[in-house]
Amino acid sequence: MEKLKIAGGRPLKGTIKVSGAKNSAVALIPATILAESPVTIEGLPEISDVETLKALLEEIGGTVHFENGEMMVDPSSMVSMPLPNGRVKKLRASYYLMGAMLGRFKKAVIGLPGGCNLGPRPIDQHIKGFEALGAKVTNERGAIYLRADELIGARIYLDVVSVGATINIMLAAVRAKGKTIIENAAKEPEIIDVATLLTNMGAKIKGAGTDVIRIEGVEHLSGCRHTIIPDRIEAGTFMILGAAVGEGVLIDNVIPLHLESLIAKLREMGVPIEIGDEHIFIGSSKNLKAVDIKTLVYPGFPTDLQQPFTILLTKANGSSVVTDTIYSARFKHIDELRRMNANIKVEGRSAIIEGPSTLQGAKVKATDLRAGSALFIAGLMAEGITEITGLDHIDRGYSKLVEKLTGLGANVWRENLSDHEIQQLKSS
Image (cartoon, rainbow, N blue to C red):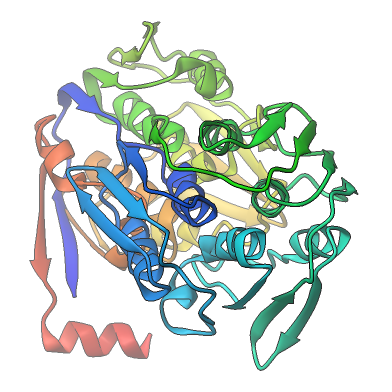
């Protein structure tokens, strides 16, 4: 086990390149199961979630080669092997194996997924969709059993807008008989990315990126080559970092359209921003103004950027309110930020930040992926040394983080934890 150490207070400058989208990758990789010949995905991030999914595809008989961000999957020898526990427990997005395996094999056994603990995130809308397509779904000994004689297209209305349910139903429906219509579908860019891969494989999908997706089922899907979109959450994290401690930071490999809500809020704070076709430049930010944000489904302000944005607000003059309407438990980073002298209190679904505060280095723990991003930005802002444990969370979503930060001039490094520190973590 390792910890991340940051000597803060250094202004950062230069260019930082965004990796492929984590939230696309975790759906694109399971989608390869649906093909009958090799699929190649280019530009994947080198993160632990991708490695976990690679191992899961190999577990069910797939041949997988992954090197320099390019993954080739030969799904021709895959079988519907039960995956009741083990690696599926490591990441929440393992639930995409349900839709993909159901679509190809008409059956699947998948353990209830893990990932970041952000409060209740039920998969009832996924199950509702699978049942509408003709699957029988049961929960047996902590695993979801999916069985269908055949899948028949259906009209499915999602009671809540859910990215996971929208993608999972798409995966199951592309090889079903007849037409499927998903109403109140999520509109995130990652859904369009998955639909593009499936279409390149031979699926017939219309309306991805709108609230109504129409799918005409096909009997066979074949392999193809696909390039993943850039990670809008990683890009947003680096934009916030540039506003917090930058003296001119260029974020490369970006689709600016995907970041409009964040760009608007940063400009409202007084952050100088220049936008190119595939890059965003964040100028040196002085005298930042307090703003309020409320997370919403896309194209609203992303819940995944709420935590890093909260730490930027400690630098702003005045009182800011951050409200998370999506994940009520996404304020676990606040206690850690208080250790660093942040003036923040939580009231229900909102955090109230009084600024500006001078942050001090401290020993802190990442409790989930985006809490981790808030803490490494806080460490870069703080006076003195910050030590962050819980790096397994950060490694799930940020590829080559130390190399990228040191490339901007940050003083950041990883160290092994001592036996005593490991015991302390296990008992906490």
